[in-house]
Each structure stands twice: as structure tokens, then as C-alpha cells.
Image 1 (cartoon, rainbow, N blue to C red):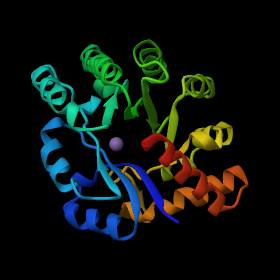
Image 2 (image 1 turned 45 degrees about the horizontal axis):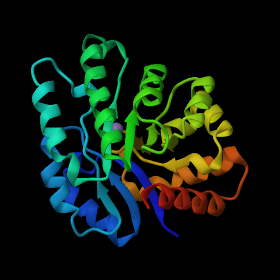
Image 3 (image 1 turned 120 degrees about the horizontal axis):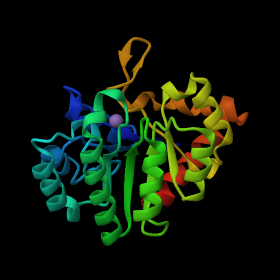
Length: 247
Ligand code: MN
């Protein structure tokens, strides 16, 4: 049975190419998210012939800056036609990024507008300290049926999560979410047909080492424990969800 890592920054590891090969050899369906459109061509070229790894076109909200956002967005728009997968995109409302919030909103709004216009895109969305804003924007600019939103590392409230479910969103769960009370409450309430697994490597560590896609099985065990279902059942549900959104 295959594994799913629906949010991993493969290009930020020094051994990017080896990891790609490992994902292919081990049949780990991996969404290789990017943080800037300047990384797109390399990611696209390395995944042209991969069966299990798909590259996503991103513009990370933490990298949105006054001096460069226009040119970054322009580049992002140029490449959009080349991919079905978008990410990492979204809004970061944390203190360190509050100064760029208006710009982040402009960028994310344009991302949603274009995703909607193209149709049939799948987005991996960052919503740290901004879940209400992100959901408001999705509701307004990317109605269900126009695209699929996967909320990555969701940390919003239970009522935000309910709203996201009503909006048709999926949730990719990483190991850090398994050990917080908030994460456990979220997993408890999420319908199994909206669950995906992710590592968010290399930004997550496991036993003192940077996590890699083959470690994503621990997320299945964690979800299984919280949902009180057998791990193989969780695994097959997640594979089914993956196939549903990528078909
Ligand atoms: Mn990420």
C-alpha cells in the first residue's frame, strides 16, 4: 500500500534528487511544494517523468515582500498554465509577518482568482494565525467545484474547521499536529473523507532528524490512534482521498 506526503519541500533538502528517487522507488505519492516561482523550472524539469512525485507552483506568504512581490507574482502567473498543483500559498498572520499582511492578501487573492479562472487546480494552503481570513477569501474567490483546497498544518479553531469542511476543504496532517491538544481535537472531528498526510519536511524533525517522505507512516499511526481505527484502514482512506483530488 502506498504512502501519501501531500506537502513536502523536497527542493529545500541538499539531497533533493536522491529523495525524488526514493519517493519513486518506494511509491510515495509526494506533492513537492515550492516557496517561490523562481524554483519552478527546476522542480518541473525534475518531475516531468516521475510517477509518484508531483511539483506544485508556490509563492509562500512568509516570502512576500514589498520589494519583490510584484515580480514574483508575475512569474507565478506565467507558469500557472504548466501545472495542476499550486502551493505553498496562503496567508501568515503571525507577528513577524504582520507588516506584509496587506501584500499577502493581494497575492493570495490573485492566486485564488486565477485558480478559479483556470479551474480544476489543487492548492496546498498555509493559514497560520489567519484561518478566518483564509476561509473568507476561499469562500469568496474559489467556490467549491472551481478548485480543491487542502489546508496544510491547519491550526484554526474547531468552528473554523467546521466551516472549512462545509467549504469542501481537505486537511493535510503532519506529525506535529498529532502531539498538540488542538491538533488532536481537529483530527477527532475531521471526517475521514477529508484527511491527507504530510511531512512539511524539512521544517519538521522526527527523533532529532529532519523528516523525509518515507517517515510519513507515523502520521497514519497517529491518526489511527486518535480515530480508534486500524492503521491500514486510515492508510487506504487517505490513498482514496488522494486519488479523488488528483484525478
Ligand atoms: Mn510548508
